[in-house]
Length: 46
Image (tube, rainbow, N blue to C red; front, side, top):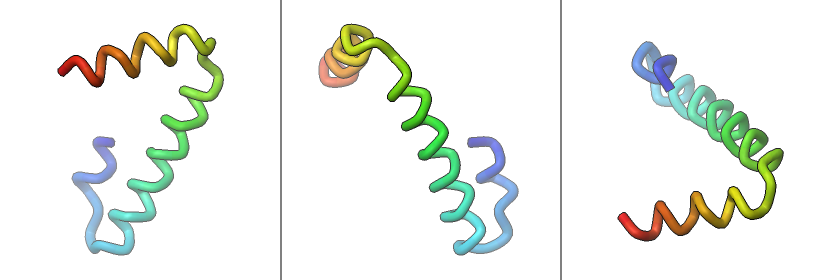
């Protein structure tokens, strides 16, 4: 996400944002299901 701070225009910002989001999504997809549930419960508790 640090790359976003260096984006020069909105188009570049959204391109970097989407790339980072895809990386996070792929990382989450590799987690075991029980771990995903724990993360979701923690997020909803806040």
